[in-house]
Amino acid sequence: MISIVKSDSLIGGIEAGGTKFVCAIGHPPNDIQALERFPTTTPEETLGRTLDFFQNQPRLPDSIGIATFGPADVHPDSETYGYITSTPKPGWSNTDLGGVISRELQLPIVFDTDVNGAAVGEYLWGNGQGTKNLLYLTIGTGIGGGALVNGKPIHGLVHPEMGHLFLPRAEGDDYEGYCPFHGTCLEGMACGPAIEDRWGIPAKSMPPDHIGWSFEAHYISLALVNLILTLSPERIILGGGVMQQMHLFPSIRSRVVSHLNGYVQASELTYEIDQYIIPPGLGSKAGVLGAMGLTIQFL
Amino acid sequence: MISIVKSDSLIGGIEAGGTKFVCAIGHPPNDIQALERFPTTTPEETLGRTLDFFQNQPRLPDSIGIATFGPADVHPDSETYGYITSTPKPGWSNTDLGGVISRELQLPIVFDTDVNGAAVGEYLWGNGQGTKNLLYLTIGTGIGGGALVNGKPIHGLVHPEMGHLFLPRAEGDDYEGYCPFHGTCLEGMACGPAIEDRWGIPAKSMPPDHIGWSFEAHYISLALVNLILTLSPERIILGGGVMQQMHLFPSIRSRVVSHLNGYVQASELTYEIDQYIIPPGLGSKAGVLGAMGLTIQFL
Image (tube, rainbow over all chains, first blue to last red; front, side):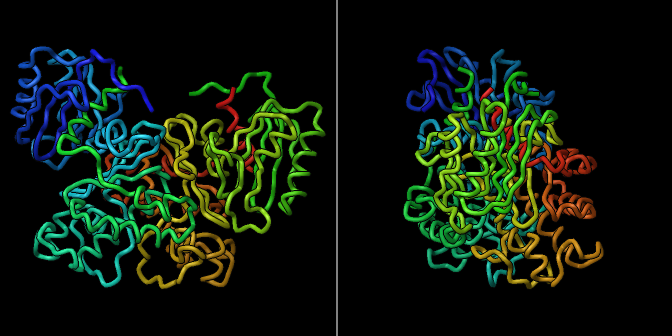
């Protein structure tokens, strides 16, 4: 296991989501001294409320982790580190989220994607404990993945965008897909809005025996197979609104085993699959705890 | 850039392939003092010739890197580190390749997959120089991939097996696939023997305007798209016999750009794609140089 924060370090976290921001301060995971949620509106208003939150605390944190929606520049040595770059979200393209926070509060920040934050949170305090190579995939309004290799998030040319994997169609599935960029990619076939678009009812209203869940398990399981073949994670955590349908887990697990067909030999991919593909361990504070977890490398 | 070997370190390398073994000793990449190739027969005979090669040198190396066919146990802290595990190659299952070499020669070894070795070799001395996140994919008799994240090969639950990604079929392609495990996975659709099986002529005899090359570019480009979305590599090197068909490169590059459709914004994925997806820089010694490169982390 890795060492956790110095006992006297006060940590800040910002979960910067496309729908809402969550700010927190404290000693994670258990001692959260203040937490505030507010909707994501304009950059000016939203960053203003974020700064207010921290400036109104009895003490500023020693550092702040920011787990953001994207695409974002997560390379510490880049000139635009801390920027949300080319997002389709109106008004937010080329927003220097990390820079504003760091300059206004005069604090070091760590800036990463929301899914890398979630992976780090689960790795430190949730169901990813005990691994060094962890995959976190969230399936909700969108689909995104964060992966740790040797205990660190992957940053490369840009950052992973695992929600957009290209996968074989399910037999009998002729849906044209929901993704404006790729049509029938994973997100295009399996995100919450795609489910609602194709079946005419929201995912959460679909009964467990609806044919749509079989398609859903098809795409998620094939994505996991490709991610296993690429990253060889020691554990996989599936979060997000769609995965609150717990009946998806056994259905996804059995398909992963069946698709791999014994090629990769590991007990985790056969009789221990129930402990390999699992839900998150952190509850409603998962996002902001993950953001706070990003700062751990500083301490 | 990373530091290279101590100038007085003598390095050994073993490229342990399913068809041939290549052994070398020297100061890579330029000063190779001896190199020998021989066919892979039984484990006893092949390991015997390998030991003979090193024992017949004027001096034993300080360490030996072994880049092996697989599946293999590449976890240094595992009880079966250094084993070839569940290979279909007759006689080689559960062969303690690394252990025999290390014990008989009383030398430290580094044991990794052939594709991780190739990636390390290109990273140190070939066309991967200047990156930290590199993807190497070989397309030949089989298909395999090695990836460096933060300059180190990925090891996780097992090791990556990128040759077996599940991909959408090309339009009009009804080939049943060549992979005994997965049928129509990347290797099943695009390895050399699959090309020969479906078209009735060896890949190297197919003219550049053969429809088969269009299918080939389809599967390789979709695999690269999925690997880009997962690993975000800073550069991609495509090696192996099939990739000696240089006309594949422009065809693959333009499809990668087209599939991604502007979603991941980076000059490397648009107008600089010619410098992003490239052939290997090391020649016929690439495999054994990669094996030697695996030891660099020791020094």
